[in-house]
Amino acid sequence: MLVTLLFQLCGLQTYASSPLGSTLALLWCIGNCILYLNVLAYCVIERRALFIDARTGTGINFIPFIKTSITIVAHLVVLLEALVTRSMYRVLDVRVTSVDGALGELTDKAKPRLAQARAQFRNKLLLFGAFCCVVELGILALVYTDPLQLAIWYLTVPSLVIIRLKHLHHAYHIDRLTARFDILRERMESLAAGTSSPGQPAQTGEKKAPTSLDRWKINVSSRPAVIDPWTVQPPADHPLLRRIMVAKSTYLTLWHASKDLNGCCVYSQLANLLQNFIQCTCDLYLLYALLYLNQLDDIFGFILSIVATFTALGVVLAACENCKSQVGQMGQLLYKWHHGDEAGSLLAHTLENFSLLLQHTPVYFSLGGFFDMDFVLLKEIAAAITTYMVIFIQFMPKEDPAMADPTIASLINSTVANSTPIVKPE
Image (cartoon, one colour):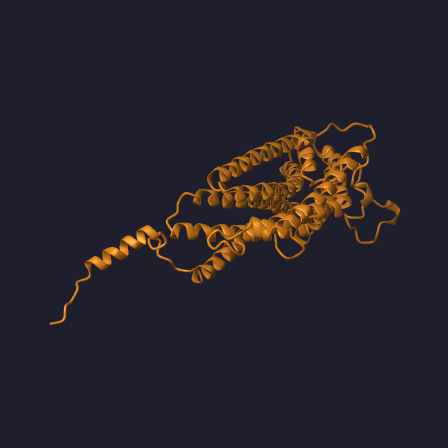
């Protein structure tokens, strides 16, 4: 409840469980869009006053202007996509929660495990929120002392925080999938070991609630000549086969949910990655310039900003890697189980079909096919930033730090003049 409320207050989730809550969340997101459109227009119109070049007194300082404008634009893209993909997120929620009944049929430990996963993400979100607050307040104390700099900070810090929380919002949905894949993997491990899990619900004669398995069943009278475990209703006296088919249908539902998630956050995450790239490149360039000029007072603020950006990106990439790892372990388990079972049996055909399904429909996370969400992306971003830094440093004006101070420069000039011998003509 706390997690969804926080995402609704940030404008990242525009729906709720009740119609009134959904309407309020939608109106709140629309109001944020209008507000930050005005903020962006104000920054563009008043750019000569907000981003004036302090060295010359004319023109604008390009680096603060581009950082501020791209941050607000990325925030607007996040809000607009939350409005456009509102129904897609609803479908994603329904699809993810629809497998809870099937997981409960496999083991009665599903509910406690899902509650534990929700608690873990809540703690992670609160910890990251506290970390962002400390970082931004530290940057405010270390860097922004001028009134114009304070005005820029007040205009951009809400957008910067929400952009980072968008990474956490993406990781939230991935963690929900990971928790269900983890329960499914553990149950498959217990079935492969040939032991009945202590969390297995008791078999009674009561009619169970329909699960996602029901949509894969067809009438037994239309059984084809070649036995296909996909189209055969498992016999009542074969509970193991039934559990495997429940696990297969659960995996397919979660796989479709991952595909829905890939389509829900394409443009917002692409805008976030662009903002992260530009911000880190500008901050590292300024950091190099301050080190070159021996001005060490402000470097810690830029270091904190870079650390916070890469931390938010690392959280969502780690969630993607964890989810893919769970599915990969399940595939290895099915492969070993299939080769250890008697060939030609219905159970062996089902295991082979499930193993091929995992092989040909892997779970992956992508941004519209442009980038795969894994740690390789973090390496590629770091490599691109390093490349641009090398190019920028080549064109950076070289100035002696001592000559930048008029007092030191005049002292050096007078010293050189006094030490030069005067030659008199004979």
